[in-house]
Amino acid sequence: MEYLLSKNVEYVCECGLLKPLTNLYFCRHCLNLRCFFCCHHEVDSHFCRNCLENIPSGEAKLRKNKCNTCFDCPSCTLSALSARATTIQVPMTKEVKEGGEGSEIEASSGKMVSKKMYYLACLACRFSSRDVGISDQPSQNFFWPEQEYMHAIRFNTILNHYYSVVLHDKQLKQEERRRRSTKQSKFPNMTDRTGLNVSAIRRQMGFDKSAAKPKSKPTAIAPSIAEDVDDLPEEIFTQPINLKNITTIQQRFTQPANQPESVKHLYPQHKNLSIKRSIRCRHCEHNVIKPEYNPTSIKYRIQQFASSHVPEVRIIKCDQLVPNKSALITLKITNPTMNDMIITIMDLPTEEEEKMMIEEMRKNFEKNLSVSNKSSLMRPSLIEDSRIVSCKITAKLELPDSSFVINQRDDSAEFDDDVQSDKKDPKFILWRKANKIAIQLSITPNGELKVNDDVKIGFSMNFTYSSVPSSTPEKKETQRYALCARIYINAGKIVQ
Ligand SMILES: [Zn+2]
Ligand SMILES: [Zn+2]
Ligand SMILES: [Zn+2]
Ligand SMILES: [Zn+2]
Image (cartoon, rainbow, N blue to C red; front, side, top):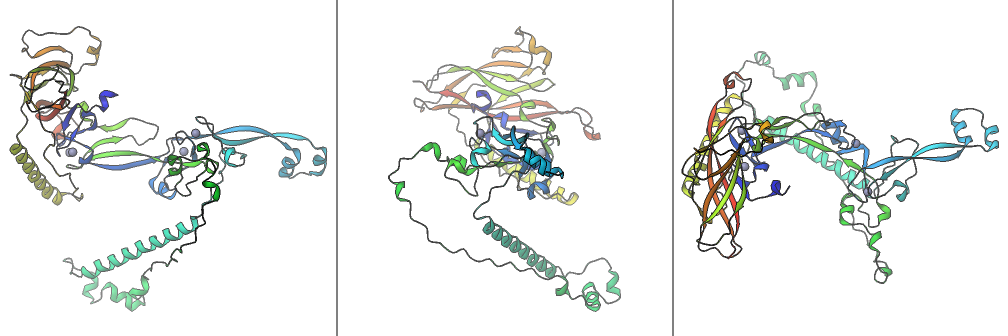
């Protein structure tokens, strides 16, 4: 986990942000890294993560994004409540009366029968629906009583008011648009030949334009009136507080409508729905992540994580870092793809070069946009503005003098133990094993660094990438591309 969250090795996204490889996606249509901000995030489906029910988005909106049948524990706010069965003794009469048979004889006999009843309980913190006075229900699928809120009516009135305001605005805008678009259509109109247009026909038929569409007016609401607030009770200053009876901020936030102060008023809350999200590249509108629709499946239909396309760099070890003194750093590079990769490590671009790259990228994008606008109806998406990388390099890195090859990924080779050493390999390669390689480079931290300052190094890694053949005719064969990833590494802190 430490490795997944570690920020020691970061890759530059096309927009100039630095992210660990595990937080990046790879668009195989643009052949570029994409970060969270360079992608569209779309909600694919709503589901309850407790009962795994799939809920259409319209229905989810009606249900206020909550599951009808599942409840969250209001006390620990971590786990779901589960229905527990219990048996209670009830007089026979009740049962028989429900059955519609003659009851008087049975009632007088005073016989007791056992009946199954259900209550909600948390298996993590032992909270139960009985604690807050909810009576047991005869069926576990029974609708549990809803909590009543003091301001529910007021909130509904305000909500309706704003719905009508939105509707009114929409109608005004539509009218404005209609008035503006009086331009004649270039196509002949049948009604034009007869000298009649739609509004004239309507008028002849007795449908007046204004009568046909009555404009909705926002419903009026009474402004809220400030009420006198009671003084604080006397004992609040004198009585010691029992923190066990007072709710935490977390508990109050899970019940925003009434925010109870005492744990006695913690009420079971309907579970919030979860979503499945698909992620789309903003530059080409292709999906980089698309999950399976079914909520029980954790698989993806499309998954373009950067870590399965771009070579991964990790630090194995680094010598003690002292200003102006060279130290050795050992890096491991892994090839995640099913094809051999040729890797060349080069210097990072200078600031001028970086500015030129950004300018070129912007021009390319604008060109693509104007082309795609003509052919497709897709809305041009907003793209993240490119920026210069904010990280400052504080050490000189001695680059390896030649390129090297990393073998393809071979899952069966994982079990081989022997480290291969090739005599033809250049000196800086320490060892290679299956699709992994260890290289040793020398770094010299800058003279002005002080104790505990971070030593940052960086390089551009050029690598060959073979595209995965797809079903489309133009991409049926594997194509090889030369790609580049810019990598920034935090080698450690200055010790002396
Ligand atoms: Zn980005
Ligand atoms: Zn549910
Ligand atoms: Zn609980
Ligand atoms: Zn793309």
